[in-house]
Length: 547
Image (cartoon, one colour):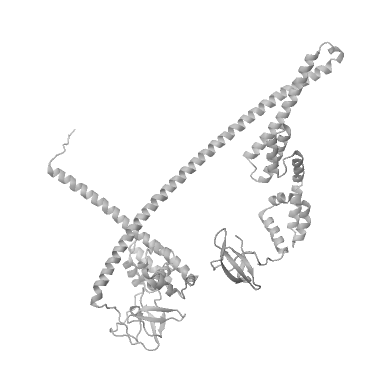
């Protein structure tokens, strides 16, 4: 065996420190690089989520509730910090590319990768062909890979460069959107208004939509636009400072987002572990309770077997005594039975009768316990009736008040023997009632009057036969009753909601506080205790509130 020695020389210490430093640096790089990628992935995911919400804002015209007249005004006022209307158009264009790409859409990770593919949106087959080419060359394609694939499928047209000059726009000029990154790429419009500045034009499209588009995104042979915006020299330093400030703010937000995501993941993991522990504890408690119930049932069955055995012995003893009396005439027993023997015989007979009663009570209790523990899966209502009858027999046999109250609670009657007996007689009519009602409901053209002629004979057990009917049958009864009644009228005191599903009060709850004839005044509920914010509506704009 070879023994290795560790040198304590300064050179060895230096090598060890360098090795630790390299290991620490490599570990820091991996962690920081992974965190940066996760942060950018989270930003892209939240950006796609914002696109769905923006589409909902535009399609449902929810911006009107904020006081804006059109979608462009809303974007310029509310979303200017995130690029305004131009950035929103870029995101919507990326959404169109992903939807047109079909099964290839999942490979487009952000809006920048969709820009070179936007000009192929109107030709989905060529778009999918370009995506397939990009994926074949690189399993994780970048923006440049998508652009190269799009050029292979559909080479871009060469645009004629115009000399830079001040725009001289005629009264009406036809232009075409030539920038592939613009969501209106390939569409034509007209310029019929003076430009707001030297770098943009107001273009009106055939569908009536007016957009503010940069000169660099337009192509026309009759008008020349400057292609690049130039800033004065005194603005250059200010713009650079703003860009630096924006970059620092973005880095800070990314750091906060990463910390927030890590904290959220930790909290979610702790919550899941806590839920699992609670579920395990609950399952363990249920198993303990089931074990206790099984042990109780075993003990009760053992007691029942013991009682049955003793009862058989007593019955056999009674039969032997009766047989002995029949074989010997009464005069032969004159001096045999004395008073003490007679008392002993009466005592045994009395004990036999009492044990018989106890046996009946125990059987009733066992039946009730069995039904409560393992109810019939096909007819739970029948299970409750049988349990109630079993408890009624148990109360009658043992004169037990608690069993009597339990039987009354299950059967739905007063806690008296007479009421329970009357309830049992009513339940005997239940099968016939269900059969008669079903025969009426299956008749073609059945009306509410036809149903009522039969149902009024069984009004005492209405809730019982309704529980036996299927959901379709009860719905048919409710529909017949609703059809026979007059339509509800909204009036003073009615609880209403707005009839328009796109109105904010469609799910709100209001109360009619004043009837003005053709119109009513509604106070909308602000809290559970009071109504506020009154408005006036016509009756056809409202509906009865259904919860």
